[in-house]
Image (cartoon, rainbow, N blue to C red; front, side, top):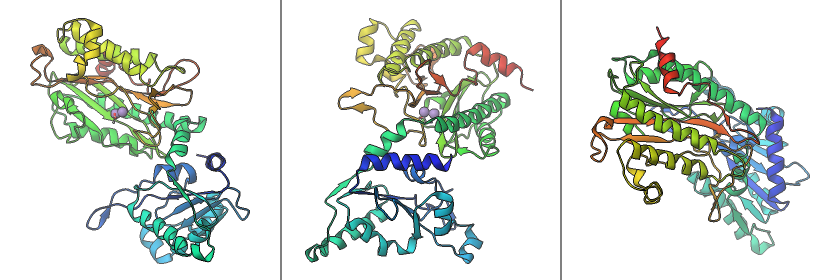
Length: 436
Ligand code: GLY
Ligand code: MN
Ligand code: MN
């Protein structure tokens, strides 16, 4: 992402904040995993969106119209000993020179400097509750100012969560953001192809997961979320993450895995036969999910509502469940009664961006949001027939299928970022026949 893109975002946010406001955004904390080791560091998405600054122990402050500078970063000071152990730091100088801050100070000085910046502002944009330790510091600074109010000190009157402004900005992806998401999607496509090629009876779920993660890492990506690789009935566990079983001849395997590149996620699910050939029952159910997914993608057009793709998927799946003998009755009543929910129990998608379940409101007031160009979402209907699903015809029990693609709304047809990956059953069989 170019530095000008971050500068543009800060300007846009500051225009909306108004000149008497201040915004405070902390970097993500380092999270301990267990003794002696930490989770891989992932920057806070809001902080990253505005700063592009990759280090922990940092705070970004926006002060619209402040003559001495509108954008201040507090960052870890340079420290040869710490840098020898943990890696190089930008330091305040680097924060100005490389990350576009108007001014930067050592993080250790924040308690001295920040109250002075708060003092002259009437509105504070800060999202409480995300970083409890940092919340306490902010409260401490404000209380300190209040204690001095009797000496004529001006104190902020209003606290506002940043989410409303910032998350609406994040919902509309720029050309550069869509470019990064397209690259993340392309890596995920290759990763899923590798898993399809490796699949065979006796190969394990974790070996397919390893194949996928290998492709992410060799492209400098990470997993946007823990990969799900569920063979057979494991596919009916929506968040199955054990990935511990051998794959069996005659089963399907469901893989839900996506690469995160430069803090942008992709999110793909494919379900395919372990041995490369669908059984008639698997194919029949698969065709229903595929038809539902295509019908939902067709609804991803500007002017439609957020729920239109879901409604299309629900109708197609319910119709399919009737044809296959799961349900009987009038389609409209079955849809209204939610008769499909035993087998399709999740929504058809979510916003996609820096977070895999990205920010942005799904409703405005009581109404579903209208889709607009630049919004990115997943389309991922599924049918999951648990082994004990007594109302389901026997031949479908233990089959779980989901098909998930990443879609950007455009003025014209939906832009399917992940359409390089086969999903038609004949294409899947042909693709798998070419392996080894
Ligand atoms: N991989 C998480 C999801 O599909 O929502
Ligand atoms: Mn997914
Ligand atoms: Mn998803």
